[in-house]
Image 1 (cartoon, rainbow, N blue to C red):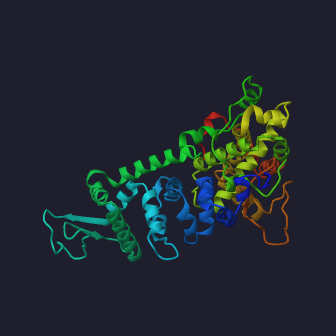
Image 2 (image 1 turned 135 degrees about the vertical axis):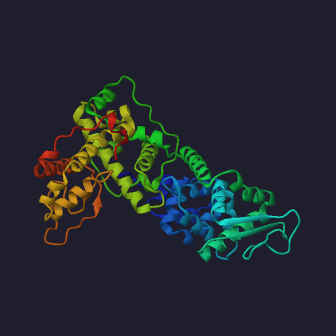
Image 3 (image 1 turned 90 degrees about the vertical axis):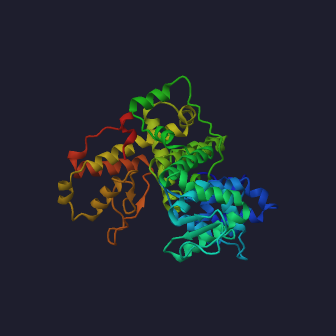
Length: 438
């Protein structure tokens, strides 16, 4: 979709984690080069390569990048992704030194350490040092003043937490004691909630909108709202001061009319920055987990498809050129324009009754189409061509999902629904009331 000529860091990175790592370590100064890479691009590269294979990247990431890498990885929605925390605590360099663990310590939100202590660590403190604990299983890091019992069934996790606490004690004993005291003054749920809110604020400064803003950015535009925006005297101010996130922005395909618009842009980076922002708003809105890289790439493709549909819809609703439309409403306006018919189509599919579906239960192709259209962000199965006819019908149907990228594909899907389920066909494009749908 976007030219990948290597004229700056974003395009040099391209799409793959291995290409990013190669670009960094072929640079004259890898430590300086990595500072120019957005943390989200670096995160995608690390997750794509595998955490265990990315120690060299992690070692030269900045402290701020480390903090954001952990912010991206440590959460399922608003709950801690504990399995990923253990994964990070297990990473070592080629010599099995603790240098990477030190970097994790510098980047981790200490409230998360407090949560781990509250869950798994029992603490006994003594006014005078003791040579023996009050119960079996306790150990002391400070010659008998403090005794700890790490109670985790998984022995590997028990070792990882013990090693991490030992590193904290050796690095900063005062902080170690403060962390041990946290469960006495804060509940696990309050610690997790505060950590999540702080994480959202840090990500917001990196170009990932907080949920309330993401809801506004992903609000579909009705026909009247779109026309009003297109005819407004003051164009939408859409400059976003963030670096483009290359793995999300760049694609291997050309879409029209979007491709024609991109060919006319002289300030392509402004477009790429706002597209990164919109994709991240959609990721937040539809609760896609950042570490699910393949899902993330697919979702970014869905957003780009909505953008293309939105431009086509705006061209139908006005006499403006593609460039003038973009200058008037920006990437956000184009996305909201395309989102409206997509959400309308999803609503139609969701309106199909269970009885109507049972009547066509033997039609595997139609069932797969309805299933994909009912997703929170609708898609289509691979076997369906743009004109609405199945392809490779002599073979097993390829029901894997693909984005809805063109107005032709959207209309073909809508026609199929109207033909087979006429009772579900009467739903207009959503308005502001659809803010909390799906």
